[in-house]
Amino acid sequence: MTLSLLSGSAHTRLGQEIGEILGVMPTVCEVERFPDGELQVKVGPLNDGDVYIVQPTGPPVNDHMVELLLLIDACRRESAGRITAVIPYLGYARQDRRTASGQSVAAQVFARAITTSGADRVVVVDPHTPAVETLFDVPVELLTAVPVLARALEKHIGEDTVIVAPDLGAVKLAEHYGSVLGRTGVIVRKTRHSGTEVSVEEVVGDVVGRHVVIVDDMISTGATVRAAAGAVLERGALPDLVVAATHGLLVSTENEGPIFPNIQHVLVTDSVAARPIPGVPLEVVSIASLLADGIDRLHQRRPPADQAMRR
Ligand code: R5P
Image (cartoon, rainbow, N blue to C red):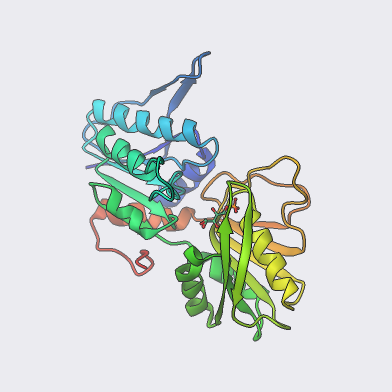
C-alpha cells in the first residue's frame, strides 16, 4: 500500500513538516465552511492507500473534531486501504470519566465517533491519560513528547532543580521527566472549581531555595500552572520558574491578569498551532520527527519504538 499523508486545516504546517521528513508530499484537504457553520470536506482519490490524516483537535475544538470525522469518512468513501487518524492533541480527552452525575463521558463519545467514521488506527501524543486508549475499539498508538521536551529543558535545569507536578493527574508525567532528567519530584494537590478556576490544597515535597520546573500534559487557560507557581513561590522556591507542557493551547481568558506571571520560560510542542502571546517567554519544540517516525513505523508495520508512551 502506498503511504498517503493528508493534512486537515487545524495545523497544515505540521503536516508539511512531517511530509518533508517522510519525503511524501502531504495533500491539504479542501475544507469549506457554509454560512450556517457546517463544514464540507473533499479529499482526492486514495486508491487503496495507507492513509494518515494529521489533524490535532485543538481550539476551536469542535470545528477541528468535526472536520477530522468528516475527513476520515471521506477517505473511507474514497476507498482508502487503511486509515490512521494522527491526532497530536486529542481534545475532549480530559472528559474521560464523569465527575458529577448528569455529565457525559465526552472522550468516549468522540472515540466512538472517530472509530465509526472509519479510522482503523489512532495516533495520539501525550493524551490527558493513557487510559483514553481503552475508549477506542481500534489500536491506539500513544507517543510521548517527554524526551523531546526534556532535551530542550536541559539548558534550564541545575543540580538543585525539582520537577513539580501541578496536580495529581500529572504525577506520572513528572516521574517520567524526573527519570529522563535525573531529578526528584514535588506534587501540588489542586482542586478545580471551574474551567478557569483552580486552587491549591497542599504542596508535597520540599521546594525551599530550589529551582523549579513545572510539567503538565497541557496548558489551556494557564490556571493550573499559575496556581502551582504561586504555591511553590510561597513555599520558598527560587523565582525563575520554568514550565514544560506538551500541548500549548494557551487560550485567552478575559479579565485575567498576565497568563504567566513570575514564569521565566515556557516550553511547549507544536502539537497544536502555537499562538504567540505578548509577554510570554514561549519556546516551541517541534514534534514533527516524533510523528513522522511513528507514521513510518506503522506504515512499515514495525514494532513500537522505545519512545512509545506506556505509563
Ligand atoms: C488537567 O488535569 C490537565 O492536566 C491540565 O492541568 C489542565 O487541563 C490545564 O488547564 P488550565 O491551563 O486551564 O488550568
